[in-house]
Length: 386
Image (cartoon, rainbow, N blue to C red; front, side, top):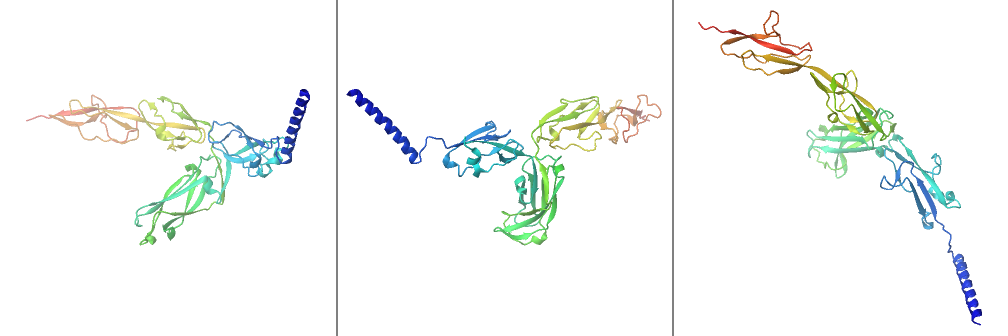
């Protein structure tokens, strides 16, 4: 009798469980996972706020999140994010409204990040890539006043593949209580790739603004892009080399500099080479020494050339007179006597290039044409007292 009771109780438990599961299905509950799993492939970029985060990132999209789903944001140094795509070639752009359909029955979807480095800039998107600012330069009056206008790219551009110049129309403006009370003369400025697209200049406030009381805080510049559109290309952080050519007979601590595209090398950052009996005149971008290197952003492999000029030492032997310190001159410079030496009881008769004062060896001050150092000897005549 006891065994039969146990069997009946067990059967009732099984039926109760089955009914419970059936009730769950009837009222919308389910043991099936309805979430969608999205795998993001950053393609060399990174997801989130740190660069060391994984290139591949899997996110679970729960059922109540699917309707308002938006993809995560990805970043990549020196590149612009071009969106998420459903194929590795990045030809089919992802539509968030089709998440469930694209995920299919297995509820899984792979997305691939697209990266672009070339952009067409227009009036509409200009401020996405270029920062525009201006400030009042002066007091509350207009005498000798000006407005400083500044345009510069928000990222480092590659001048080799970007527009050569961009024309912008700018107008100085004075405001009071956020209302324009005066507009100055409109003029054109140019952003040039040779100057890294950076412009910083003054727009004069002319006499037509005299007597106007205004608040210099607020709008101080109107501008308009005149060039309809232009191409820019971002400079990537790739390894680059600056080769330092010093020529024969010179020495330098470094023969080349290893850096990354976009690094800034000022002329004072470069080493100073040394060459015996020569003076270093600076680094140049050409072997003919026509274009001096003044520093800037390094965008490609570059060779710099050290310019030296022969330094001539003029040594003075006073032969009993007051000492005259040796002086150094560059070839081609003009030198003068800087005053005659003095010797008590003697009269100075000139400088000679030989200690025996041979005929024709008296030195004539002027332009140094030769490369050799010069020794000068003072000649004296004794003064006789009668």
